[in-house]
Amino acid sequence: MQLIIHSQTGINRISADKIIRIEALGNYSKIYLVYSNPLVVSKVLTWCQEKLPEDMFARVHRSHLVNKSYVTKISDGEHKTILMSNGDIIAVSRRSATYTLRTLKEINTATKIAS
Image 1 (cartoon, helix red, strand yellow):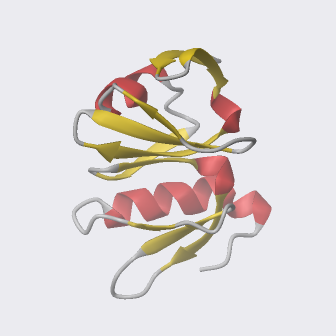
Image 2 (tube, rainbow, N blue to C red; image 1 turned 90 degrees about the vertical axis):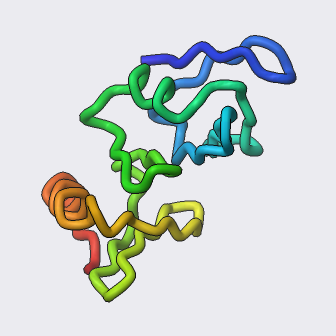
């Protein structure tokens, strides 16, 4: 699955498995990639979410969409957070925390994610 996006640098073809996470920036989105610097595109986060495979990505906050395969640690403390493989720490919204964390843990049980 590839995401085709127009950006400042031209037309980009991004493989879904190379996206670590996407962060909302108003009417823009910042795409964090495995192999290069983040890419800022003029698409809202909802547009990105609709284009990417639902089984691969989880909306953990109104401003964050994460690739489930790059989640390395899930914190179950008072303020729930997710540690990504690139070292980014993402806050999980309180409203969706139970569902989001349960889904991520079920998917990543095979990879032994620490709680």
